[in-house]
Image 1 (tube, rainbow, N blue to C red):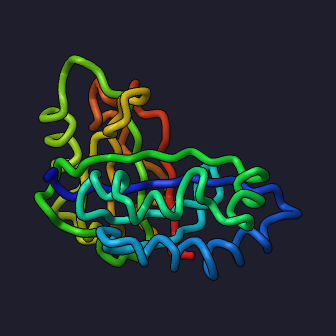
Image 2: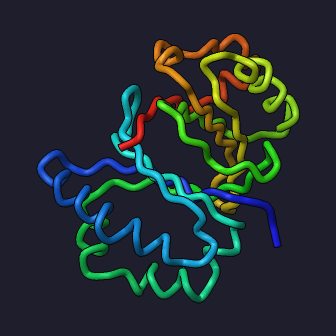
Length: 195
């Protein structure tokens, strides 16, 4: 069995469909997912800086949860009619990622969450990225924690960092120079607040 993981979903509904989208998410989708053994938490966020508008973050006991019979009963060909209706109208970017740091720490409550996504590559490697994230964020008064993940999907190779913020202080931007060679691989830098 592998380490803790996340299912991170970024979504952009059309403006005229937003009310139904939020109703579906809150009344059907989140409760349905939390009923699957191995889904340990589910949180929704609205984007303050960046795009797309919504993010859902599911903490998983491990990535194998998404291969379980319980999950298959509510996913793919077994989607509910409402889920099929919503997903046919909403732009979705879904990522499954295993946690690299810090150990088995779960998502913590925070006023804001900074989402950073980096295209993976050979060099300088994840140890360098982790060191830069720790140097840039850990120990700061306005940072509650840093988590680093690597995607597990064969068709996508990326690192995802989630930085819990105690205040809106970082909403003005991040120090790209401190990211060194990773700055060129940064393809997403959004700030989200709990929905």
